[in-house]
Image 1 (spheres, one colour):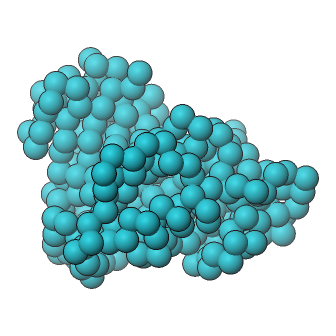
Image 2 (cartoon, one colour):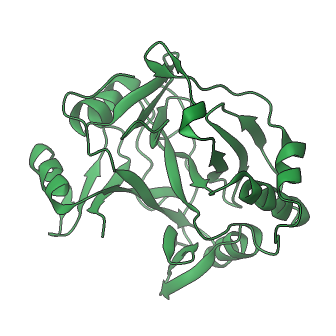
Length: 283
């Protein structure tokens, strides 16, 4: 693990992800009936979705939005469920709902399933193994892409309610981004903001975290080295949220960065590839 010179607060997490969608009604239907989120509130063409009181996703409708290929932006957002039983229930609900899966994996630190929404936004649903089971390989947290024991995951959910996909306690676990340059992204997320580097996947991807987690943010160049920012108003990532534990940490970050926006409560930054992140203090 490559520790930042001034690490971001250990209790830092990621929060809600905001997406621009061309068909708001279709997206809301998918995320509620297929994925199991609930509408928390709607303001015009903006819909806030979550589980229980936890806001996880904000959808901004824009009928003119189009997908622009090979740009920076969202690779996937990852919803962390509290138990293997919950992951099995979510998997069964997706199967019963006829949602096509794009993959599944055992990452050693976690078990995960992958899919996409109707507009191609990547989604991971996963559960973590206990940290005592995580292993280091040198200074890096050991992760892999091994086959998922899908039958074992489904068996863990026998008797669990499956009329909705995601239980209370589900939260945003991490966000994985397309960027144009790995070194520039590392300089921003590790060198400036202070996330530790937990794993480098060759020269094409880097995983970063706060507080020893396997990763809160990942970056890759799989959309192409030198990928340009996703144009404003295009389909896909609008911004994602980083939640620091208190106002003092928020002020520290504001002092060392150049916020695009600072409304006195939270700050908006853009990484070198144009991905927007909103940093706010937790309650």
